[in-house]
Length: 201
Ligand code: ADP
Ligand code: 5GP
Figure 1 (spheres, rainbow, N blue to C red):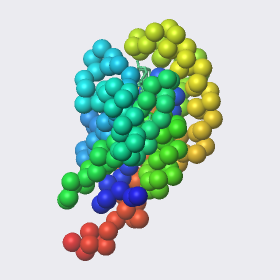
Figure 2: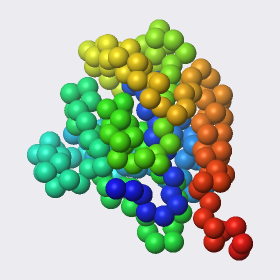
Figure 3: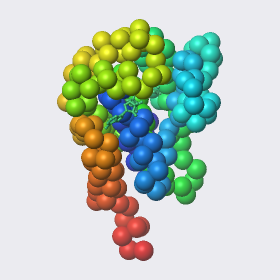
Figure 4: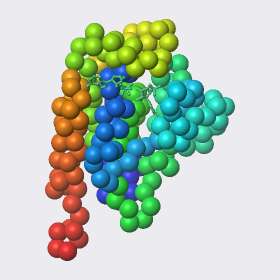
């Protein structure tokens, strides 16, 4: 299966609390013609999250039905909950050239690498494990038990970095946003992404 048209697919992955959604939020504000793929999840909304914006929050039964219907481009169980990218999120209306940003875990990213060969993959690393722990706690959205569960998995997740085309260390937000922006801009001007009809217009 391949993506229709010229849309580029940017996969941002890395351990929980590393800053993926913060970075994606900034990119969506700063760069034109890019949108977020809204995943389905069985986890509960955090305060401030709106159904249909950060995620579609659905019951596990509905999620499992969608798996049966092959509605997901990828899905995974992450920290005890189900998360998946609906194929519909990757579809483009005819004539629309909007790139797509996926904020997904390492299991999902591996599936995307296999099925959507032209995906651009970016791994986000923390400045250090200690900083990752502090950021997970500082976010204030998860219980101490949930933070610890996520932190325990982070070192295993980080071992996957070498499968990705780009690696960005999220030290300061400013620097990490700039690097992510640079990746997106560079990918957009790759000759391989140019269609002959656009050269002689
Ligand atoms: P993820 O989406 O990877 O789970 P978040 O984007 O929710 O991570 O970030 C986790 C916490 O770390 C948030 O409180 C966020 O504001 C903070 N954060 C993200 N990037 C930085 C950074 N470069 N410096 C300091 N804090 C950061
Ligand atoms: P959170 O619960 O903190 O929003 O997300 C937990 C993890 O699930 C993060 O690593 C996030 O990137 C990942 N995630 C979010 N949506 C998807 C998805 O559609 N598929 C997969 N595989 N992971 C996802």
